[in-house]
Image 1 (tube, rainbow, N blue to C red):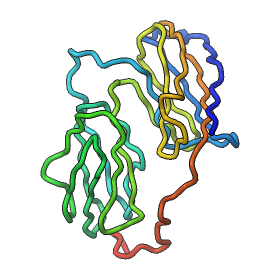
Image 2 (cartoon, rainbow, N blue to C red):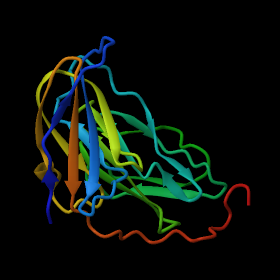
Image 3 (tube, rainbow, N blue to C red):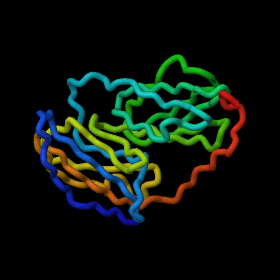
Amino acid sequence: MRVVLLAVCVLASAVAPVHGASVEATVRDEAGKPVEDAVVYVLVAADASRKRPGPATMDQVKQEFVPYVLAIEIGAAVSFPNNDNIRHHVYSFSSPKKFELPLYIGSPAEPLVFDKPGVVALGCNIHDWMVGYVYVLPTPFFARTGNSGKASLDGLPPGPHELRVWHPRLKAATETTGQKVTLFEGNSAGVLFTLGLKREWRIPRPLFPRYERGN
């Protein structure tokens, strides 16, 4: 296992006024390929005076969790709508949030509040290939990478900070990915993470799952 962290490059600030600093993060695997669904975050505690974070959604579409990884701030409420025309039974045995949503279609009556930090792995009792993750963070500053392996974090307070990255297949502990950077008002820092990843273990989704809406 190897985690390679490259030096931070501070870029010139934009001409227009910018509030706070920003980070442009790129996440790659050891072969140099972009890593999707990685969560990059800055270790900055949330202001106690801040309001509760806004709601989030973990959808169920074509017998998959969408998104595969949902990053939220601690205290956020998450709804779990089922947009398939068959019933799903969503559950988690993860210690930060153990719960069960028995067979249903549509939306459960109440969203679930995630009040402990950590990784919450999701499954469906009916469809074994349905796997998803809610990553609960004790900071308001985070972003998830797209298929390009890139993510942008904006509005960061200037000063010295530590950035970390998490991914469901990360070989190392997230704490070992720490990379220090000093941010300046109105400036953007570029950060590159190269991660060692475990092999994909998910059960493949059937090529022609039955009973999807529109079939």
